[in-house]
Length: 279
Image (tube, rainbow, N blue to C red):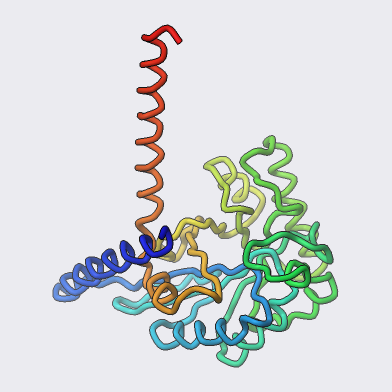
């Protein structure tokens, strides 16, 4: 039910947004839009579904690289494709389909996990939880694929001390640069957990852009440092994927914030009632 509810609200949001864009277009003020998608594991059994999604992406948007710095022309739609964790099945399921369509992508890697097995809720088997090895990562053709950092050991960085967080930011970048012999300037936060301090420490560590899991529109400013992304899976229904590509799920953070506020107020009320009752 939660999935269907999100779908219905997103469809309504898309309708309202579409009307507003039409109004802006009448005054020549319709801005370009970009959505950054992020995947995790893409099992081989879902390769065809992933390929269909990439066909949809090409039919209604223009692909961009996640390190894009160019202004977006008015009225055009763009999409960028990223992957978190560097699962091995990306090599056989996703990259061939992207290469066939000349769609650029970015893979965010935690070098401390290379060659290991990692958990993921989109994995179908133990094999789908395997992370690429160092040699496999080095063998990726760099023409259409960029490599970014995903911390060194994939912790929830908001729970680290400042020293630990800075070490994760710096050591992951240095390890990948030594391995790949090229600059690593992009970073995505593990679990999407971040705060203002982490953003500033990432800037100090030399990253040129960091990525969250907040489903807003991206690249409203070509020089933006913090870029939002929306999660997608090959198992998404086509209408779900199209709505995410449209940016129609960007109402979710506001809804979660309202929910947290209401829950907090309710909890405060209950605690006051208990206190007044002498419990």
